[in-house]
Length: 198
Figure 1 (cartoon, one colour):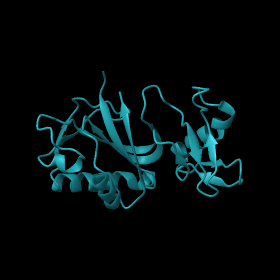
Figure 2 (cartoon, rainbow, N blue to C red):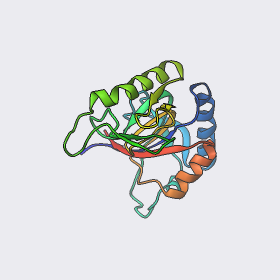
Figure 3 (cartoon, rainbow, N blue to C red):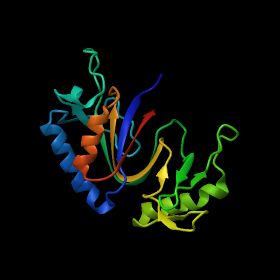
Figure 4 (tube, helix red, strand yellow):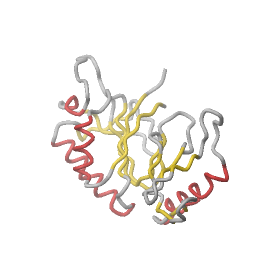
């Protein structure tokens, strides 16, 4: 068993802009009736926040299949601050990263042969993410083209994201593609979505 969530991460907003953008997105979701201003900690297990906004009367507009009238989604947690986000239980490292300059895929965890990160391969990414969390600037070099690329520009596997603003939809049915597209449009930035379990 466990509690599931779907997360939308803004991978372009800066740490300095994230708080104001979070408030604007909350206001938009309240106006749309997707959430209310009431907060609850019931069923919220996000790493850096322990409460979220209670669903509003129109929450079903955000999901792919609203046909179950008994479904009661949980709160939407808003996570502000530079961090990396993982979807799986016990996951902490990315499986791979794709260089946005040359499209080379760097394998970090060689599934199914290995279940742990190759520390030599992962270290430059891990160091770049740590620097970015601390200062807002962090890069990892591509082993193929040599470009030192911001950790927010690398394309990570679907269960890993780097960003300064994330939204955890706890206990919601899968979000619709159209809602995720509109959400990204409202943010004005590129987003990454992934599902996870606590």
